[in-house]
Image (cartoon, rainbow, N blue to C red; front, side, top):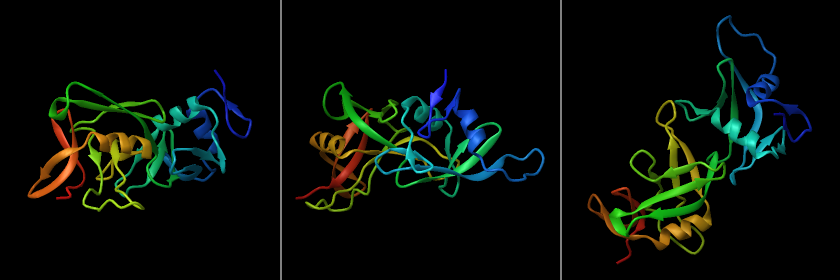
Length: 200
């Protein structure tokens, strides 16, 4: 099935598009091509190709399946034949919906749906990550992320929680403790994830 890009071109699959957009440059025989590609993922999760949004969600999902993160934290689109670095303003994905199962507290399981309809259960393998020691003010609050999958090094691939999802999550917060520090956080799959300092 052909998929239309924002520039009107069509392709049968994302690997064909990636082959087309990789810049022409010599590489050593047997080496994977490594080039900068004209992709940008905006903070709100919009994928741009040559400055224009990719309109077809199927194409975004296909490119997302090729996304990797190297040991330096850079993002790449990779196929068995080619790879190229792309720009990402913040996290490459957003978490747009929150659901939970089970009873409250440590017995509940939280799940998040991303903007590419990937469902992630929050647990030890997919933790919530936030600078929770940052004080919450009317103008600023810690931005939570969820880890979708590991990268090639210490930098994972994340989804940033939207403001609406963060407020839903905050409504489920209960007092807890990390080390000797009191905090507010949520339980999921018998793991506690801090969200903000505890205000006595």
